Length: 197
Image (cartoon, rainbow, N blue to C red; front, side):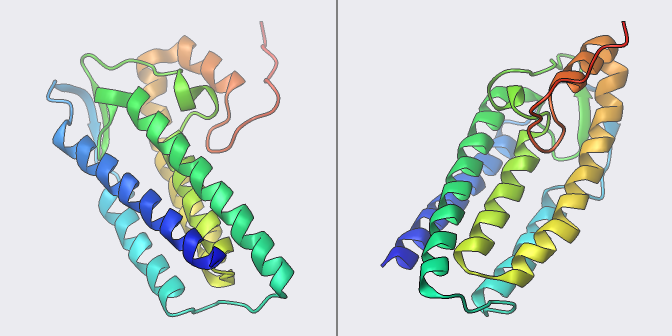
């Protein structure tokens, strides 16, 4: 019963994610970009990874058998991580608003968002996706899904985040440097970098 409930929670979180992504596309910023750059890592490549990940989970490729107590613990921890990732993703998308782009864009009316999930991490949408994939792999006790999340997906998110940060640094320079010092890139930072002032 706990496994079925966990899968219902995951399905609801994936549906919420799909809905928010569709909403982002439907309400894309129509203002002119002052910086625009295509990225290898965009919604299409992330969806491709999601399909590969789904195949691993669906066909139990890389699933491992754990003692019942460990299985229950992994399911509970996994669901908590998935729910946290969904909340962070929703907060991130709501606060990002019109700044969102499938590829890398700096718009005429672009703002440096530092509220909501952006207080926790500079790239909460990517952090949230990592949480969703990690949590789901734990729920399914799938070592292959967990491994590809952290050796393929996480580096892809880092690559995309670095591309975005170059553009954001050019646009917001001093403010962005200050933001970088107090907020982690893909994962929350529990310390602040010291200023060189």
